Image (cartoon, rainbow, N blue to C red):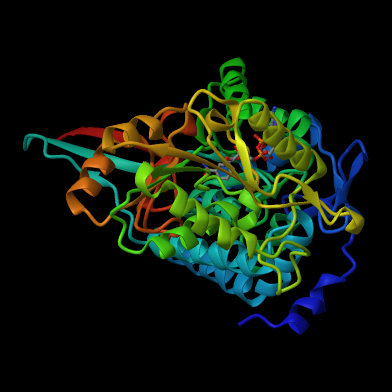
Length: 495
Ligand code: NDP
């Protein structure tokens, strides 16, 4: 149970101006350019970030490459690599609250959630892949007896990772841990809007004994730093989480450079489908409310499109309305608040623009729709519910990535499937019904990487997070994530 006094211990810590990690050195960018880190809690500067250009990125990639070729990490016995990764997990846990508060000051996530979702989850991810290291084997194929066919599993070399601001530590760990487990070097670029906790992870990794150069961290904005990394000729694989707009550019950068493999976890516009036969509608309403509004809706799998069977539409909307009305918005480091701040002023403006557009296209604002707590200087928005939302509207088709829930009625199962699949996305979905056969029929027809049944959200490292359609390719989490960072080599030997 979190204690406010414990949280307060870290909330006013002076945060040093940040450096980047290249090999064993924490250094300034070569250009000396920096930018402010603005806390969404009060709109004030809390530190400064290095802005890296292609020269810094080059140093970081070179550091990763040299370490890889020397074999400091890639040739270390698996059992020793495992020990170091377990130590990283242990140190993340030791610094859990400090990391969570640091991250929340940077990106605005409510501390109760940040604690579990950021360091809590990151520690679990390092532990999961550490445990996998000495259990991964190559294969022997069943060729005829006068030949021996071997399949080697090899690291790819240098992995670049570009991650967003909503859960930097959790998503960063989803990339770094499996890449390290396979013996690769990593260069990661966090978002300029949330870099602090990943920079701190860099310190932890060195303290745990990760050989210098195995993990390098460059900071700055996507257009310069991110682009330089994605265009680099010596990056073997780029693993990305972020928007489809950036994802498209990364595919182009790959084509323009060395055709590095690109794996993407992109956005979503996930349907949450509620049938009238749901066993406990009240529970469904409560879970669905948090399924969209936690972390101010800045969650890739957020259930942002509520689809409700017509006969219970008004009743269910009333229940969701009631739970939403009771949510307390405010300072993410105040344990009394349910929902924290929007990550940045530009994200807040984008969220509000979507609401205006929805109104102009016939949506009815049931609750919310406004910026609040402006006097704090921070970026806060009311949880917002918009009903009467039609399939061909902007808000139905596009990801807001903010605290905005749309509600659309449906007539029957076929109608529900059609509405569910009517966007370009295919990340997650929710399904509420007490009819087991219907659940299985729907699971097969819904085009999404994840289907939550009679719940919304939650899973652990054992399940992959996969996007279909324009929500991405490849998987984060689970043993499947290792495939992204592994080259297969076939050996055909005559006996
Ligand atoms: P962006 O695509 O804007 O940014 C993601 C990362 O890409 C940031 O580090 C950003 O840097 C960088 N970037 C931006 N432009 C470029 C470029 N031209 N070249 C290289 N890198 C670039 O997404 P957001 O940060 O706004 O994140 C929100 C998106 O992430 C949503 O669409 C959300 O759904 C998706 N997401 C998907 C998840 C999944 O698992 N499928 C999980 C979480 C989020 P900087 O910010 O410094 O400019």
